[in-house]
Amino acid sequence: MDTTLSGLRLTRPVEIEKMCRRLHQSGQLNPVIVRPAENRYQILDGFKRYFSAQSLGWEYLDAGIVDVPLVNGKAMMLSYNRGGRSLLDYDEALVVYSLKRDHLLDQSSISRLTGYSRSWVCRRLALVEKLDAVVQDSLRMGVITNSHARAIVRLPRGNQGEILRCVTENHLTSRDTHLLVEKFLASPHRKDQQYILSHPVEVIEKSVSQVDIYDVRLSRYGNRLLKSIELLYLQQNIFIGLCTGHMSSKLSDTETGILDGKMEKLKKGALAVGSIINQKTWKDER
Image (tube, one colour):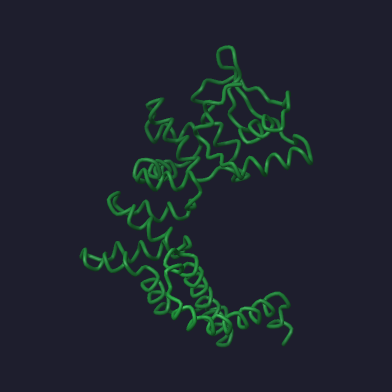
């Protein structure tokens, strides 16, 4: 089996472990897809199944054979996964970039070959051509998600690493990252940008608190509840980021002593919030 095209897919160890458990419990439910390539068969779809079967010591796999040129085979890698969305944006970007680099296809030709729009092709190419190598490595390793990458790619390459550090050190969600990038791009002076990089959590918190959270479908009470949920969600993310960051280990004994009592109050409140959500008492009160 020829697995050279596996370089166009993100296959992380944790995903192989999941597939191993699936194959062990249920067997192979779907065939791998291959194309004849010289004296071997080149895998187009089913890399996780193939590598997992190897780990399990299997000798055979069901396979579907398609006799197509390599360039068509790469396009088929996109079509096989179109419905199930098992391909991430970056996986798709790697395939599209390979069609451009290795087969010298322009965006219009790639669009016709794959069946995707030219704007879709352009966006996928940007994830490889405009995304800094450090950010791409973080994406491959699972440190950030595709949503994070879509936000960061809007920045000049020279600023992407700075925002990446803010994201990883503060455990920012993709939504927070989009907001932070918006603020960064809207800041004309480097001094303002430096403040954003030094105080990302505060910038996000202030920005969200100033946004008028409102839904015309909701009553006045419903909108108050909506705003409370949004702000609580934001504060939750900020709290998690602060407590899991490296600075939390540098607190002095005096600081931890002061914060312990607050943490206990927060714990009781968190239990009450969890109870409301789980038991749906906010609905039952009607």
